[in-house]
Amino acid sequence: MSRTVTIAAAQLGPIRRAENRASVVKRLIALMREARSMGADVVAYPEAALTAFFPHWWTEDEAEVDAWFEREMPGADTLPLFDEARRLGIGFHLGYCELDQSAGRKRRFNSAVLVGSDGAIIGKYRKIHLPGHAEHRPETPFQNLEKRYFEVGDLGFGAWRAYGGVAGMMICNDWRWPEAYRVLGLQGVEMVFCGYNTPVHHPAAPDHDRLGQFHNELCMQSGAYQNSTWVIGVAKAGVEEGVDMIGGSAIIAPTGEIVARCSSNDDELIVARCDLDLGRSYRETTFDFAKHRRVEHYRMIVERTGAIEPADEAPVRRKQGAR
Ligand code: CDV
Image (cartoon, rainbow, N blue to C red; front, side, top):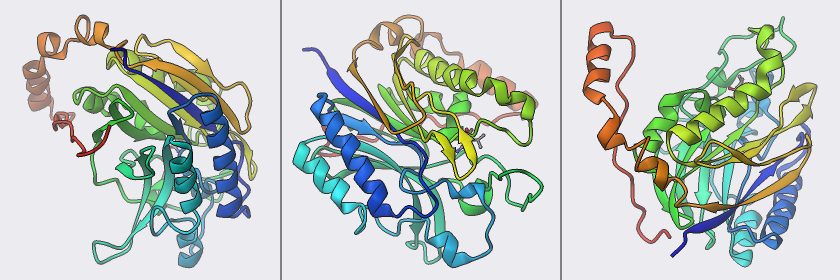
């Protein structure tokens, strides 16, 4: 029996700083309806998809910071998205900023959830690789204050039974790190969802600017190929409050080939029929991890140099009741 899942990537154009959640959720629902009408089983949205990308601005006002975050998922503003998914029978992946109080103190994360076609949350991920800086840099045209506004995610790189296969998540800067893909690959992941907000300009290294789109595709294509998985990269694109962000949302096959790519810097949908068995011929030959990886040698190098940490090889978390 063939295992195909039709996946849509819903790129977003800029979100205005003053745009409220209701307006953004309307945009997300319009894209979800379009995705369903094109036969999609699941639609993926970008990183921090509910607001403008506020880590580009410095503020010391706690209340102003908190206003960018969701205290619950779904909450009153996002419930219509969950209801519409259930009504249409479509799953989704959503990046958002999470304010968590469960540890007895306020914690803020850059998070994402996988939601089933029944509207139930299947899994949650909290971004691990937080780029940028924590201190105020008023001399730059915009800032990358993720280290100020978020804590490092504490949930690891999980994988879940979802959408007829095994799905994992990472968020933006994570995709530049092969370890992130490999920890998912070790869990047999077949689809990796990754939302991003990537500015064209890199204030700390402007000579990288011309390569932004190339690095984007380089990371997604090598991550897909080396781990025999589909990768769904979804951008927030266009000029958002003066910050020009790359688009180029794409769906990449386990062959490493891009099978669909956005062409605008606005709200735009791309759809691909993804054969989840396509990765098998790579997983069982070139990238048969059990046969060909040389973990003992990697460990030896790690122990000798102390340069890097060995990867976490946690087993896949199987969610009861998930497809
Ligand atoms: N949102 C991100 O993680 N953005 C980073 C930028 C700041 C370099 C990225 O890796 O695309």
